[in-house]
Amino acid sequence: MLYITGDTHNTTDMSNLASKNMKICCMEQQAEFKTISAAIVLGDFGLPWSDCPVDENGIHPTDRTDRYLLKWYNQKPFKILAVMGNHENYDMIEKLPAVEMFGGTVLKVSSNIFYLKRGEAYNIEEKNFLVLGGAKSEDKAFRVPHESWWVEEEWTETEKTHCLDVIRSCSGSFDYVLSHTGSSAGIACADSYYLNEENLLELKADPTVSFNDQIDSTISYKKWFFGHWHSDWGYENYKTGKYVPLYHMGIVL
Ligand SMILES: [Fe+2]
Image (cartoon, rainbow, N blue to C red; front, top):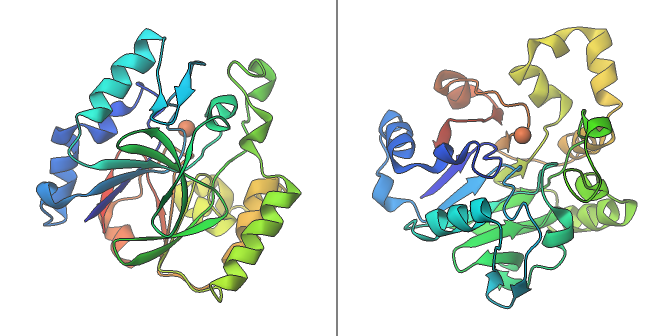
C-alpha cells in the first residue's frame, strides 16, 4: 500500500510520518499500517536543507538537524518518496545521484529516500502516476537566494515541454497525479477564498498553477493529490472528490 501526505518542511512537520499519526489515518481508512511500502510527501520535504557532501549513496549531512532527520527517516520500514515543492534546496537536489526506479529515474537522498522528478511518469505498485511539482513562494522577497529560496521552485520552459512529451507518450491517461501546488479547481476546494471569481483569476495567473490547469484540462485521471496549501479537506470529501489537498492527513492507496 502507498501512503500519501502533505508538506513535512524538514523537521517542522516530520510528525506527518510519525507511526502514531500514520496508524490513526490508516485506521480511519481500514488499512493496515504494516502493509505500507512507501510514503509519498507532496513537496516541501526539505531534506537536505543545508548543503552537504553527496556521493552515490546519497547525502552525508553535516548539519545537526538534517543528520537527525535522515537517521529518523532511515529507520522507517518503508520508502519515502518526495515530490519537489518550493521549499527545497535545489542546489542540493541537482547534485543527487539518479537511480532507476518505478519505470523512470528518481533522485537518491539515502537508501530509502528518493525525490520523484517533476514532469515524469512512474509506475508504483501497479498504479500510474504523473508527478508534477514546484510552486511560487509568496514570501520570496523575504528569503535569501541559495539559502532559503531557489529560482528552480518554478518550472523552466524546457521542463514543461518535456512534461507534455511524457503526457503524450502515456496517451494522457494516468491513475493519479501528484503535485505540490494544485490546479485552480483543486485549490478552490482547499481554500474558499478562490471561489470568488476575481481571486480565482489572480490564482490562474500564477505560472505553476496555470501549467497545472493546462494539464488538468488535457489528461484523464482518478484523483489529483497536492500539498502546498497546508490544508486538509476531510475523508468525506476525499471519497467523492477528484482533488485531494493534504497537509497532516494521510491517504492510503
Ligand atoms: Fe509548505
